[in-house]
Image (tube, rainbow, N blue to C red; front, side, top):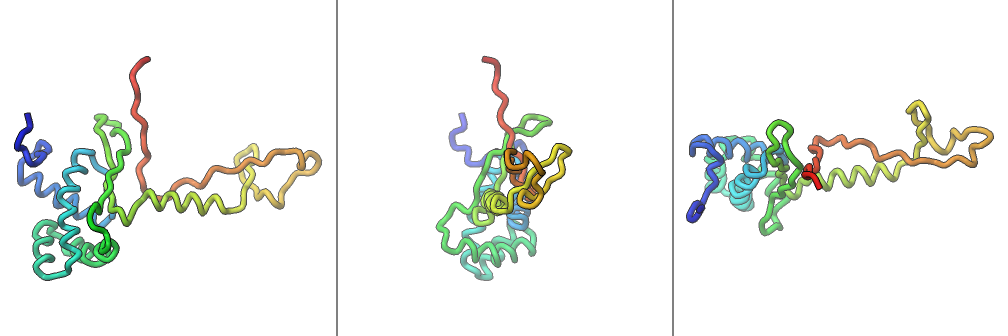
Length: 185
């Protein structure tokens, strides 16, 4: 039974766990998203949310408390700078955990944890929408693309179907989402 167990030790000593959470929180604040296991992401969310709440009130006392936990001047400056401005009106829930599949080596359940106002998911959707607005292109048999408006072939050109090219590949460094393999029938 797990009664009265307040923390998830993550199979580490307390010093190792505190150092790991401090480093992960620093990476999350600086990079706005990180990929990790689901268990670590859930523990990290409980660690980071109070720090972000403290960043709403920019005082020397709050900066010192956050610095004692993050141990990175760059992360503290970013947290009290851009991040605090963006989340000023948000009452809580500053992070989002998105499950992204399983790690190939050991099938560990992986997750993307990100700051909500710096969402990768919103960025991917907006780039897909902007690429859909671009002029449609035709693909030739050899794989090269031609603009659909000016390069029609003579003869049967009016009868041919125009195929739309898929949206451009994602340029963001968001991880690919893998589906879970299900057992037999």
